[in-house]
Image (cartoon, rainbow, N blue to C red; front, side):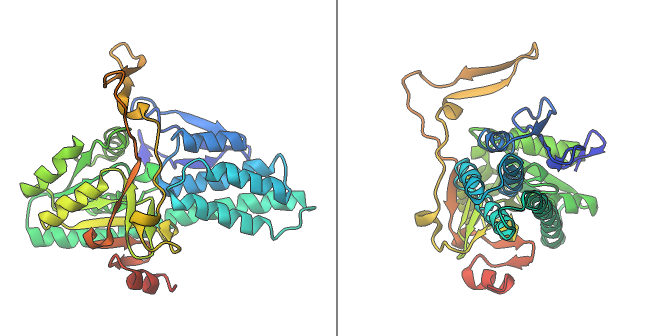
Length: 364
């Protein structure tokens, strides 16, 4: 997508052909910083420290992390060890597991003795995973545009108002994104789109990242506190909701950023369409019950007790919000049951959030 008039992706190979460039998303929206990953440790820390985040992008970064590990050692043992390091970084996003498994399968087809070929295949495979993500997100945008256009024509309003939660735009993928891909497509199509952007505590990825993305593309938007969504829906100021997902079970349960479930409940109560956008790589076919089976990442409590930002003098500062002795829980995700999801917007088309529909779409 466009940043200050120039096209960027969230991750790309450096000119040297082996190191990997990323946009440090922790610095956004105030600073645009490009960092270079040179080692497995760099890639793992980029994921765990959320310099890169979003299920699709985590997967692609992990794929390149395997490549960087191979530059040091190409044996099966070392590759498996590298995979374990990456898998420990973020337990909830299934794209991470998917991408690592793909990489190991491709690499281990090559004899251990053929070091150079293993490295070549690794980089080629990571590049293909990267490009497939871009194609998938474009398709999500295409299918989602049809829904937005239909709702706009039916509602007969001057503007179509869409509420989204967290950040599932191009910063969460390689390009275009998932939940924001249909919004970008609608804007390019000339539809008068306005986006309600949930701030998304505690890391404020909506206020910091989604708002920044939309601003760069010139799309009208308004940042709201997390608890405003239900009120806006009651007032008829939300025509539809679109969120992303970090893991979707085979029966259509959706694991997404904490607070998504509450938005879905409000949408159900107000008859507001609630859509979830995802590529096929985010579906975990091994799971049938999101609430019972999906591991929920518990992040550092300091993300809740403190808040970070830039001061008037331009310095970066962290301040405490809570009493020193107050304990804070910080589950990063929640589960939205399939029954609350109007439909899934996938790279294969739009379908009901249920096992039979997903299996039919993905020929499982």
